[in-house]
Amino acid sequence: MSGTGSDAILERMMALHPKLMDLTLDRVWRLLAALEHPEQKLPPVIHIAGTNGKGSTQAMIRAGLEAADKKVHAYTSPHLARFHERIRLAGDLISEEALTQILDECYTANGGEQITYFEITTVAGLLAFTRTPADYTLLEVGLGGRLDATNVIDPLRTVITPVSIDHQQFLGDTLEQIAGEKAGIIKRGVPCIVGRQEDTALEMIEAKAARLGAPLLVQNQHWHVWEERGRLVFQDETGLLDLPLPALPGAHQIDNAGMAIATLRSLATNEAACEGAMTNVTWPARMQRLRKGPLIKAAGEAELWLDGGHNPAAGEAIAALLKTLPEKPTHLICGMLNTKDIGGYLRPMASVAQTLTAVSIPGETATLSADDTAKAAKAVGLQSFTAIDVQTAIEAIVTQSPKARILICGSLYLAGNVLRENG
Image (cartoon, rainbow, N blue to C red; front, side, top):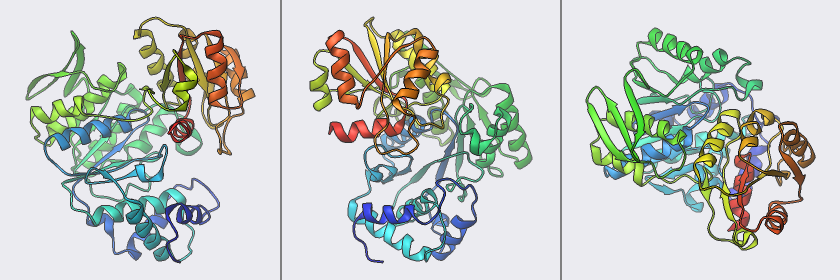
């Protein structure tokens, strides 16, 4: 196969397996062997799993390490606007030329065998990381942990962010089962930083760590984090840090910041690195204020925000943040996948929003229809409408409420479409 651009190769990769998800590591190990095991040649790896906060926590760790003058690879998923966002080489997004070459190499090495899109593109990311020198590699789990395609490495640290109910069709129906899958990234003797957990989840994580002799650094046991007088305070056995609040908005980011700082402290970084983690972090579609583009023109005097959270815990975090903002009429534009708990996500939002305008997510076969999203919103007490697209929804809202606060929400896939279309 000849390289004809990354988009063309990615499209071919989609056809290599009939299922989007098929959790096993056999195909990944086969391809890694064909490529002479790039997973064994990575810079020291920090492996991050969990249900909520993985991306934000990874972004803060990266900002902190970079503030300490370290070169950092980072792998995350899904992407928002372009696939290239998944692979960051020593701080920079992978170039089109490098991505095309790596994808082509992996496609050829796979030899036409069955392999899922996420599996082969994850291997491509690992291979890319071996071609550029760096001090650390940050790997975010795609789904679960135990059988996730990223779980083929020997990490320096593991991190487990808060675990909640999500992806039940793949990970199990109970919090205990899901936590067991997330705890699958824990490795023998490797320190694991653990964020705030419900008791059931923590018991599973502690049991797995005990079996493997993996030291745990658990929030509210080994380290504490809180906001005080507009500052972030972090305390562990080595002392107390007084830091700026994280640049990412929302009370939930305090806990994410704590996990990042606990990780950085375990790596013996200095206070300047921890401060850089707070002040230099950026992470799109996490309560991101949009300030330019055609949608801003459509919004006129209205505020326009974007968030990709999609489960009940995300709904609670977003609602809590909205309550802290200056009072304004708040209107939601929402599109979700049909695999998500839409009622659980929207229920907390009903207390902070006046209306919800439902849209279908463009180009996503698994989108919940706008009509079904509107029905779910009505069921939790939100006055609901439908629109053919986000811009039409914005125009309708500002006609009735010119100085509103508008939040586009419900899915990272919707957020990615907005970022692409809004330029």
